[in-house]
Image (cartoon, rainbow, N blue to C red; front, side):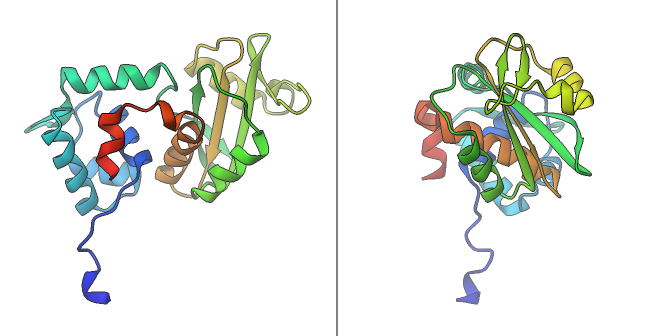
Length: 200
């Protein structure tokens, strides 16, 4: 079977979502590959599909979203935010995102989902009284990790009931994609068909 190696570029729904958010600003293929720890062949295939779907355009300075692509990102953003780097946790790069109007969730199961998706660790927090708290006991994050709490407050505008997902991993790409994985675990059914069709 070794003759098949490299013949089938692979990427996930998490990669598709990450690339769409990344291409809000023009970016080259190599930079996308390095940011997401994704093979250049897979990136090339994904970008080609996004071009065919008229979601991105290519120019000398890189790839960027078309109007249609921007409209998809706006639809995604109603469900969850773009990931942001929020510092380090346990010595690993940490990324976070907000999930808006989350359905019922089990924070332990969501942490496990992140770890299954190559995260070293994850934190699922609920916004209560205007700040992230641990849903199990209502303890504010600022009491145990004030720097992280401050960083989250700088990057996100919280609404009551939002979920805050923080993931950390050895590779930045893994931290980014594991955060999106948690968001898609909760909101995958509400993703636009144009995005789902890219991974079939």
